[in-house]
Image 1 (tube, one colour):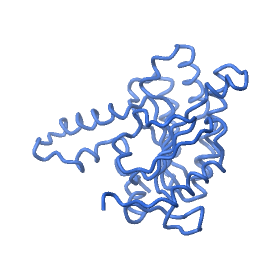
Image 2 (cartoon, one colour):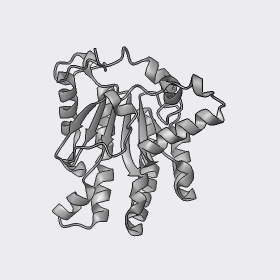
Image 3 (cartoon, rainbow, N blue to C red):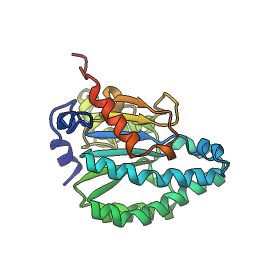
Image 4 (cartoon, helix red, strand yellow):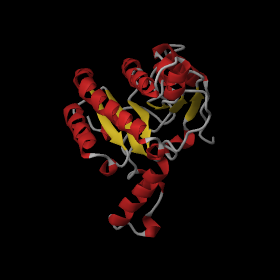
Length: 252
């Protein structure tokens, strides 16, 4: 199943599949995105090095992926590394890259078993070759997954995504008068995925930090005070339940 197939199989705009509060499958978000914030603060809170906070953050991803798939979420997008993160200390950046590579190698067999297809959102050409090789392997091995799309935003920027989409339109020879929202959206990294229904941010901050800024135009926003390593499946269910309680009008 392709990402376009996923989008076609998810029902009418503004709905999902199941409400965790009522059991009504109409109210589950089809596409959930998460800004996984708080790893460094978690490490300081527990008197640990920042590297251990990032490791705990990576370990926290798997239970959420599993719960999202169990609930019938069609696409889960997680913010792993922004283009702005290059400004951090080189040692921390190297740690993040090492954790990504290890996680990809360790988790790919289980993702294949669960039928979860991995995609990367971001500028892969700017990543080290070793990292790109690990990513390519995971993409190839999980390409047949039809249960859920797992989109890892790595070296990602929402503004850069829009710039890249505009550049693709120019390269495709699209005349200015033919440019519209559909043309631009079809060239975004997320082309073919279900519209973003729910954007979660952990760690207590209330901003979207340049993440999926086009896609979030009509998404429901959910902010949790929990630091990412402490955001478990029950906390994820609470976010889904809150989504189910909201009324979405889309300007109507």
